[in-house]
Length: 137
Length: 382
Image (cartoon, rainbow over all chains, first blue to last red; front, side):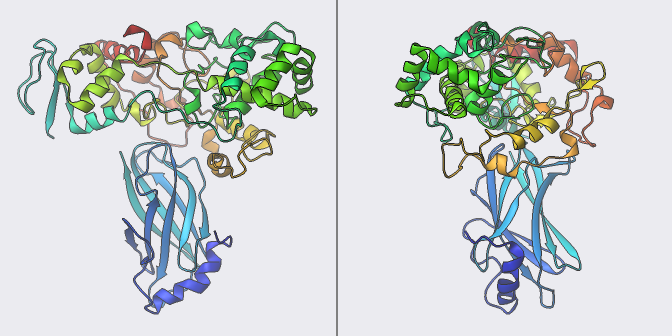
């Protein structure tokens, strides 16, 4: 696995998508989810595809800036249960998997129910939060 | 929502989906049935612990079983692991708070099904069964030994030294700490084999899974009604998840934090500090798995203010045998536990606004049904 942080990759890979190199998250196979933000799009999938209560999992994801959006310097991932008002008991770490892909490792949902997964796209000047939802039975 | 009639005990047969049921029938929705099925099958397949090279080794299990009952592992030669983890009490001691060489602040947890856990101890200060097995041996309040004395006991007693050779295929190492950790790993190899048997609930759950209505009808109606509360308005299965009936994590459930007047038990908050400071955690050199494949939780665990006063969610299998209850043994019976959640005082929660718990306001009959369900998780009443 490439060891440098997401911000390092973002400098290299995000302009490729912005320039029309392919659909955002085209590298992701299987079931993906797309979150459209104001300045960014996030496409993500869980690894494994089916996640279970109390079992660690990862997220593979792409962050793609819209036309004139600045290149993010860092991306942070977290999750919370809005109805319960608590987050995870674990702190995910985001690393770059390749030029176009990121992986967040260390997630664990310890309860069934609705979880909001947040992607904080940090340009240095501002942070845009994109939120996706996962439902765990 | 479509309703599936599960059991008509009085008639001994089931009506069709959505049909009228008799007065005693318990009905479960599709969602409830999915939740019920998630609590099995049982037992789960055995998996060896890669962090422990003794795991799954029959010679190590056998030696670990002997060590478990051996008082020579204690500082005064009087206490064994089995002194507090008594098999006839589902490996607890029946006391509100444990008593080793001195009084301990917490209730003795059962070690049955312990191989399924991610964290060990009420505060999760241990991240492996072998690390947790070492802790009470060197705790001055519990067995009161230390690493040097444990090593000396093994080297100085021919039967123990021979047991080591059988378990690990080599003579006891010269390094005291390495030897003490291996003792703990043999103890863990034994404890991994301690598993509760199948229960009436498991039979009901499996009958549901295969659509065997006759077999499902043998499950007592009171237990069925209690199960419906458990997965329904009680939402007990939000934390008591899966075949082991625990999500393996930590919560503040409104039990007072004071271990003694003026002294607070910080629970998980302190457990994480101890975990990180431990030489024996899964990120350390005693992990036998060079890939650290089971260390993900240790690597990513997050310490926050809300961990203060949180304690681990216990399994509910054989729960009827493990009274008294809660981390401090403050509730004497299962009926007391159910009443606690039914009437929980939200002002006692310190969980930064979490909205998981609320008073269930159960009737007397509902509380009795919930207790009947919990008692049906006991292997002995089959």
